[in-house]
Length: 212
Ligand code: DC
Image (cartoon, rainbow, N blue to C red; front, top):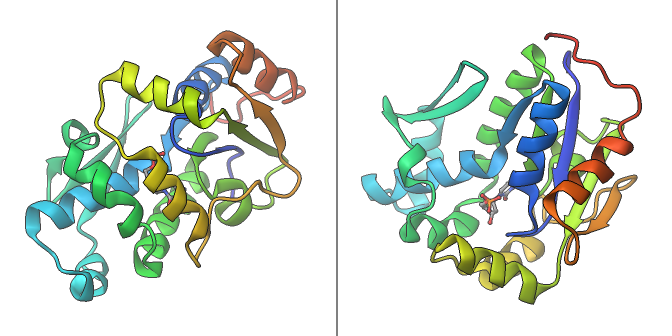
């Protein structure tokens, strides 16, 4: 990897996205949600009605393209922007199951690695510090109590089976959600966004963008 990667992992609704976005803007790195890649693929399988046994063939044809424009990543599925669909209830219901397939994980990881060849990144997900970029020196694991995480999701108004997603994400065979070795664990249950962002930035040391 040519660029640097700040890896932020954790379970659903632990605050990863919001924190990662704020840290990215503070240090001038590109924010990347790896969950968005799995969600875009899940959306594709829903709209195109792809059965599990055809996933390998489907993903081999590279249905998803990544656009990196104006410091924002857009995911296009056969040319259509997946962004408005990433929180659709059918996507939330299917994404963790889609993410258990090694062919899907290989596809996403190759795109994440390609991004890191070009840019400094703050990337959030489930396996960024453990599997995708295990060599990065900046690894964080955010957690919060299940009750607080359920409250946060409810406040966003999203229909999201987070307990079931947590179960699938933590028990799958390939790249399960774990606390990556060497990561800094932050319990965000009683912390404000600002406090978590400050805690992360305080642990980065003197990090300056390579590609401002
Ligand atoms: O972060 P998120 O809730 O948008 O992620 C959606 C799903 O994608 C999550 O339940 C599991 C999967 N995922 C994954 O398996 N590995 C990642 N690095 C990121 C997400």
